Length: 357
Image (tube, rainbow, N blue to C red):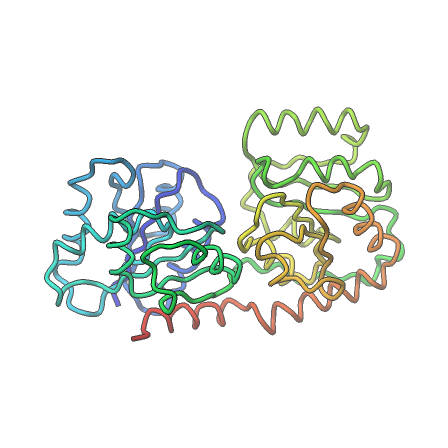
């Protein structure tokens, strides 16, 4: 099958990792895969380094006459066994304009993944685009419910839920020696933006005296500066390791005792959930968005209210003070991943959507 993924993000993030992993798996299964990108050097660079043929073109903007022609030309020579997979609801309009330039027999299947928790954008031009979609994948039930919560042209029967997965698998942690550890290591991995709530962890640190924190990720400059200032003000900067962006995800996950996702926004279905679960690391996370669909509170992780340093500290301390509980929860996390979230299972679900009538 000829598969083209369209990506319009301004920077490299979880959604782009999702596309890279899926495209790579599809290529490994013998499909011919290409990428359409907006002119964002960082994003283009990653996909080219992944060995993909990348078409760079205008995706955003009110007046866009050339890109529909370019997209149509990619598919003009294919009959039936072709598909375009869009990763942003708003971009369905661009693709619909391209498909209208093709005879019906040469139109590829048209799939969209909704990576966010958002109401469907509404406009006549988008309703027309929605009518051309074959299927929409939402990354959580919360994402689906919100997408369908207003009046749009989206047909509910076309919408399905497939929770994310990851191909980034660290070796399951050996926690046999945890009883001897004086300091428990906690890991945050993600973008440093206010919605991710890293300031909540730093405000909780004075209440977690036996915990060190590693922060992997980069982000908004002003917010990052604020985090450093707050760490110094709270007197915990000597217990925080700032890594910045790193490709060595597995290395840092394998060192961690506890994962933390303190998001204050409606987290749709963060990939890092699955990286911690796969490594057998218990996770303390906000009970926002799709998180309760992934983590079972008290079994494979702990759910806490966002923006609540005391609640976050209490949850982490309950694992710090009880190594046996931490070990049991970590084992359950690994079992959850193997039972529900393997990449093979995710991939089969996506390909079933591709092939469904």
